[in-house]
Every structure is written in C-alpha cells, then in structure tokens.
Length: 341
Image 1: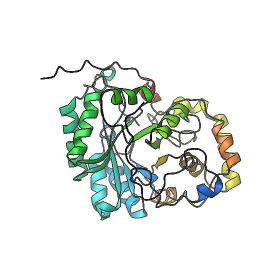
Image 2: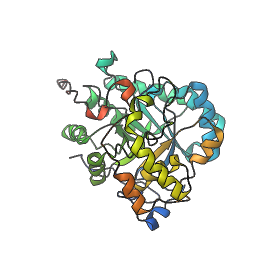
Image 3: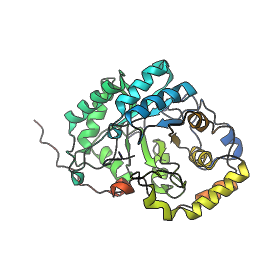
Image 4: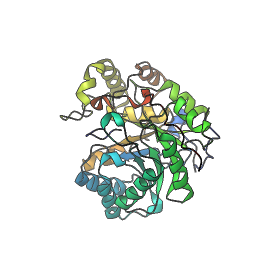
C-alpha cells in the first residue's frame, strides 16, 4: 500500500510450500476448514501476515514485537512506510529466532508525477541493502517492487534477480502489477515474479489479475482486506473518507454474514481473502486485537455467504485514493533499453 505521505509470464517459480496453498476459488467448507495457522503458500509464506502500513516508528517497534510474540510468523513492511527501523527493532526485541518468521519488504520505485526520482538497477540494489540495515536482517524472505510506477521497472526487476542471486532476498516479486506488466518481464527474458501483492476485498476482487496469477503459479497476497469496514483508515488524512460512499451495501452484507457466523466483520473479510487463495495482512497497534486478528482459522465461510460477498465486486480500488492514483491502472511507458556496452 502507499505511504501516507505520498504514497504470458515466464516459467513460474517452483513451489516451496510445506503445505498446499489455499484454494484458488471459494473453498468448499471441508477444504476451507483444512487451513490452519501453520499453512503456507507456494513460496513458504504464512497465510496471515502483520502489516506495517501507517504505523509510526514507535508503533511499528511495539506492534511488530507484540505480533511475533503473539504467534505471527509473517511481517510485511516497505521502504515507503518509513518505519523499517522500528520494524527491525521490534523484530529484535521479540527474541523470535530468524528462521521462524517470514519478512517481506518493498522498494519504492519512484514516480515522476510525484516528483520522486525513478530508481535504476544500482539504486534498487542500494535500496534493498538500506532496508536490510534498517531491519537489522541479513536477508528478507520476499522483496517486491511496490508498483509499476517507473519507466525503469525492468532495470529494477533485473536488480531483484541479482539480489536473489546474491542471497540478500529469498524470493522476488511485485505489487500492483497486472498481466501486461508481467508480459514486459517475460519479454525481457527474465524469470517470472514469484508473488504479486494487490488490493483485494469484496469491492475490488481483481478477477482478471487473480485468474492470471492462478494460471501462472504466482503467489497472491492481499492488502487492504478491511477496506469495506466503516473504521478502515478513519483517522484524518488516512484516506478512508474518500471511499465511504461506496461501502454501504458491502457493510450490510458483511454484517449479516458476521452475525450468522458469530465472528467480527474484520475476521469475515480476512477469511474471505483466505478462501480465495490469498495470503492476507492485518494490522493493529492494540495488543489484544493483534492476538485476536491471528485467529481466522477456527471458522469458515459457507459457500452461499462467499457468493453474497463475491457479488459485491465493483472492481473499485480505494487503497491509494488519498494519493490520487490506482497503481494497477497506470500505463507508464518503459524507458528505452540501455545500449549494450
């Protein structure tokens, strides 16, 4: 997701999961109930992650520490969140062994419309090393390009391939990419991204992107899963007010489902993402809520209620509305390839 201030693929990556990924389509109840807190996706990513968007350095430190102690095994960060130092301190304070959790971070590619310089190959390498230093880690499990906003995105992706070769990242991928962006990577003769993190909730079900990722073995990660809640980004400047008018029908349906299942609406939305085969991210600075948010494996959403939630889709992205863009709809032309030396 954006920082508050600004904010036909090649061969798919080999599966590395210890357990099967969640079903690509709404899971039947039996299959859905088979998901557990130890389930991982194709790249070994735990299916419920703790997100760090819109947390201050201090909040990130305390919340990440609390999340790891509570049992979260997946932390999602980004250069653009401007809190990687806090995340790193929280990781260290938790005392959890490095091999026991999965860390994602993202490079901010740059965007000329915001006056942000586009990163090239060298700058992307440097950005990853800077993130590792802030996070106090020798490697991250997943490194993503935060969006297709730069004309230099092929050079950025080449840098990700090199970072993986160097062992500084275990897996590489993208965020907010659609099929045409994957085709650019394939056309450049580069290995396919292993993961794509996209906005995914009942108003924005990403049907085309989801079908493409399912067909090409790309791990799917959802952000802004709770965007249809009335409390989502409700504080001034967070941007939730810009989409409030779109949510009335969704809020009625998800409340009805919540009441039937006897679980909070937030958990319904996270579980809906899981049953569509996505890893999901949740965030809180409240210790009790942090612990509660991890428990989305003790129930499943029946097929008829999945259908009701699916019917809410308007292909309406809202997560970046405060920044005035939808990154998946951007068509930034690629820079001309540098001549061979």
